[in-house]
Image 1 (cartoon, rainbow over the protein chains, first blue to last red):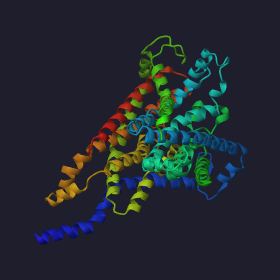
Image 2: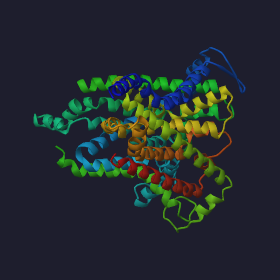
Image 3: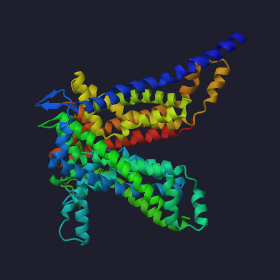
Image 4: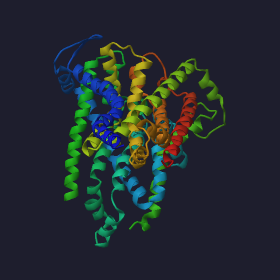
Length: 295
Length: 259
C-alpha cells in the first residue's frame, strides 16, 4: 500500500508537467501551422515581386515604397484611417456608456441586455451590411420616412454610397465587439468605490474621469483597437454601401488577391501597413488618454 | 448615484438596441413583401421570394458546403478548443496562462481580410489548390478563439477538487475523466461547438479568399448582392438568421447550465 501510494505520488509529480501540456497541443499546433506560418509567409511575400501571375522571390522594400510614394494609395490609406477613427470615435464612447449602464444602472437586467447586444454580433455579417443599403438608400426607409414627415423635400443623397454610410454601417457592426472588453473591465470595478468618491464630494464627471476611466483603461484601449482595426480592415462595407469616393484600403488589398490585376506581394505589403498604422495609433491613443485622465 | 438618470439610461439602451436590430428587422420584414422595390408603404405579403431563393441552381451546392464547413468547425474547433482551455486552466504558471490565452485570441483581433489572404498565400506556397479543404481550415481558425474564450470562462469555475476526490477513492485518471469531468463539461463543450457552427455558417471573408470556385451560402448571397437588389437575398438571409439565432441561443442555454 505504501509503495503504491509512493508510486502514484512520484508519478503525478513527474508526469504532471507533461500531461498538463498535452491538451494544449492540438490547438497549439493548429495555431502554429495555420496562423503563425501563414502570417509569416504573408510577411515574406510582401518582400517579393510579382510578374504577371508569377511570384518572384526577392528581398525588397519596393512594394512598401510604391504604396507610400503613390498619391492614390496614400489617399486611400488616409481615408481608411479617417473612416476608422470616425467609427472608433463613435463606437468607443457609445460602448462605454452602454457598458456603464449595464453594469451600474441595470445590474441584473444588464446581463440580458448584454446577451441581446452579443446576439446581434452573430446574426448575419453580410445581411446587416446589405440591410443598411435598404435603410439608407435614396428611396430607402430613412429618406421616405423623413420625406413623409415633411422634414426634407428632396432625399438626402449623402446617406448612401458615401463615407457617411460606411461609418453608420461600421458602427453597427463594431459596437457589440467594443462593448465586451469595456463591460468585463467594469465588472472588476466595485460599485461602492464610485459611490465613495461621490460621497466625498466629487462631481459625476470628475468621478468618471479620475476614477472609472483610469480603472477601465485597458478595456478602453482594447475596445479602441478592436474598433479601429476591424473598421480599417473591412472591405465588404465600403464595397456594398460606399460610393466611388469611399474605396478603402481593404478593397484595394482584396483586389490584389481576387481581382483582374492581382499583385499578391503588393497586397501583402498593404496589409502590413494597415497593421503598422493601427499599432502606431494605439500607442498614440494610449498616450492621449493618459494625458486626459491626469490633467 | 444613478437613480435620477434611470429613464435616460432606458432610453439610451432602447436606442442602441434599435440601431443594432433595425437591419435585422428590415431584412425579415422585406423578405415577405410583394413589392420588389424595397420601400414603404408595404403593399402586400408573399412567400414568393423564398420559392425564388430555392430555385437558384447554386443553392444545393452552397447549402451542402455550408453544412460541411459548420460541422467541421463545430467538431474541430470544439474539441481542440475545449482541450486547449482545459490545458490552460491546469497550468500552474499564471503568467504563461495569460500569455497563451492572449495569443490564442489573435485570430479574433487580426482583420479577417488579413487572415484570409495569409492563408491563401500559405496554401499557394505549399501547392494546395483553393477549395473546401482550405476554407475548412480557415473556419476552424476563426472559430477557435471564441470556443477557447467561452470554455475558459466556464472552466474557471470548475471545481477540480472533485477530480482529486475521485482519484483518492481509487478511480484511474481515465475513469475520472470519463465519469466525472466529461459529463460535467459536456454541455459547455456542445454549447461552444454550436457557437462555432454559427460563426462558420456566417463566415464570408476568409471563405471568399480560399474556397476558389466553390460556393457557400454567404458567398452565394454576396454574389447576389453584387448583382443588385434582389428580394430573394432577404429570404435566404432570414432563413440564415433564424438558424444562427437558434444556434446562439441554444449555445447560451447549454452554457448557462450549472456545472
